[in-house]
Length: 421
Image (cartoon, rainbow, N blue to C red; front, side):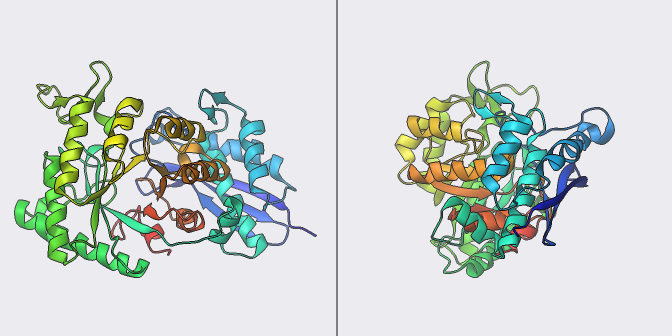
């Protein structure tokens, strides 16, 4: 007799930033037990599916008791007796029937919350793998119809700016990617060695207090020039002896410093009441990126423009897309409808996969399959508010996403995922 779901239980736990989030346990009739927890982001796209928070004064409004109650009182009773291996069927049932809310971009999870639905979706996926007695990454690969499994190239976020740090850097993340490594083990070695060399470089140039870290564990020196961040990385890579083997990626998170009123990007947005001298147009910002690419070994630029600036995304992709991966994060929010629009308009050439942006395993797989069919690259990503859950490591392998942003071994938000391969 096939195993069925016997119980689904949600609770509130805390993520790596000390904010509440949702954890779910699923138990099956064959004794299978699976547990999953949902991460959350600091800089979030406005088109992400609804992350349901309680509001009010408790936890500064960030409690998730409503999402927990939605799992325990609505989702759990509806899944009792269901087949845990029927991932697509169960995800669609939760998203389309139990929740059923839609907007112009598809199912938005405004009734139950994406954090409620996703926690169950992840736990069910783990349970399905256990019931089938196969590794989680293989189960995910089977769900996606993926025959070829590969370990990803890790992207280490080693300098933090933007919403992830209290410094003056406008651009949010400066990453290193050990593309010249022969194995994941060697890639980790390269990444860690560059990270520690970077610490020495920053300390020597700016002093001990400049080696304080940001929200994701990367260094947060109080510099303002984004080019200086790239220069620090270039120097650290050279000192580690990995020139040509370790390259650079950026997550600009440009929506964080876009001014919708005058359609400009303020590279000094962290300074209140600034004189506006560093406000530039989308075309000027594009030229800044092009100058970066010509001077530094940059292979990936994520969210170079605002999440609604489709025009400049397309221009950037047309002019730089052959040599650089233009990654849509806030632009796409792992949403198949927005991915379809970006493919049609040639807005970017890579998807950043964050399961909590869309709220279910099935929709995440759909977004990845669409992206790959279009010839895009795919990067799996953690969030800055992470948990001990290592699901995204299996997701990266199961979907063969080639590159993965999994944080830093030295950071609580990245440690579980980076050490799971």
